[in-house]
Image (cartoon, rainbow over all chains, first blue to last red; front, side, top):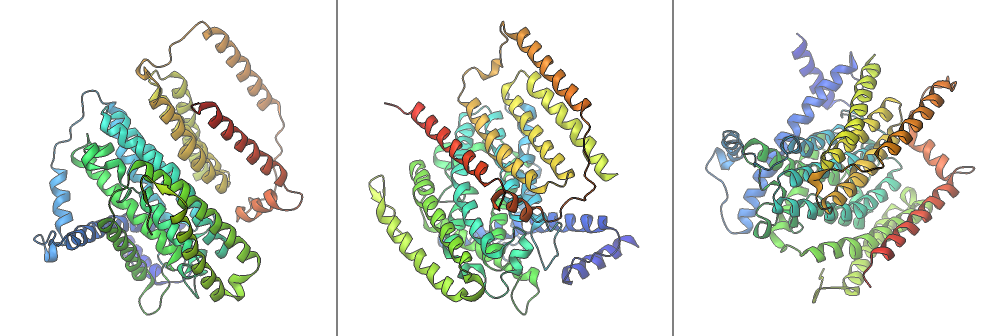
Length: 375
Length: 162
């Protein structure tokens, strides 16, 4: 009778308001670990479907539409196919590191969902360092990519890994500074408190510059096009996972889309109000918002050409970084003046004007190569 | 009970990883063991209710310092040879033994004061007060920042091509 009880509790908990878990706290831990793993896997299948179909539409094709209704089962068919493939280890590879690397890339993706609230208080652990935990854990994936690039003993893998590190280290700074603006307004690092602080308005209306920085920096950090230099197919075969095949390759594939889901989740939680919205249950709103943000990422990918490595660095250090500093300063001044409590609408208008002025100003202030960066 | 198990797991893994750092011939694997050691130390901070410190440990040491270390290794030639020993092996061994002995003696002979107070629940607000509030460590924080900035500028000046 234990398992049905857990299921009932889980359903009740997802619909419930406060984290008043009945019985032993271990049940909470077990149930939410299971929910997190299932959630991330299902979401990855969902975003892969969205990516393939949307990219196909943007390119005036149909996309996968044969397996299952509307091609929905294509990802599952691919997974089965890839499971049956042989796993090849290169002769000169550093074998232990080569085997551990995929797990090091994928595990942090699941860990991050421990602090994401699906409903009010419905999360694995309401850490009071929530967003710092997300930033810290997501930085572990970089080590895994480095391990893969080094242990493959392949120059393309190595160059891919080096490029990844260069971009991740550069883009981490504007991303964290953009997060700090939200933390200032919400007055807490906990993701649950940040969502609760968006009861009246989602933070995209008061922190447009922060949203822009997080979106651009996030796309660069998870290596989505137009910033996917580290696996630029035309130059590097496949980047750091060139030598991987079979299930190990599938781990990277899952990890890549898992990181995209994580970034979409963080953006929807911090800026789009997370699970808050009327009529529908909260977790459904969260899923819809994640898909919306991810669709915007696909849209960006289909629209913009890939940047060069010097442009990648220039965007991070000369464009996003100063904007992030200004955003943090202005937000801090507004919080000191007490605007978030009394003059929220004024804060929104001022910040939107600031966003427009700053982007126009900065796009004229520096050149990359022979052309200007147009906004 | 759970904390005891966690502590012993983390302690054993961190000591083994630390030994692996100095004994492994392959310098890349040694760097990875160092990363493992950093992560277990962060785990120890968690068992001590220092959650903020644990997150910062992972962010700074695993996410940044170790990456720079590995990048440095990648730019080094003849990595596969490992670190060849030279004449300074015995003096280094002696110095390490003396240092270890001093630290062990100091640890064993100190009467450690144990606070009867329980751990603070939201640690972040208290930490912020300590760092930036009145009678806090604001001057130390700022001096550290200026020092780091000076070091960065110095590094840039040293490596810049004429």
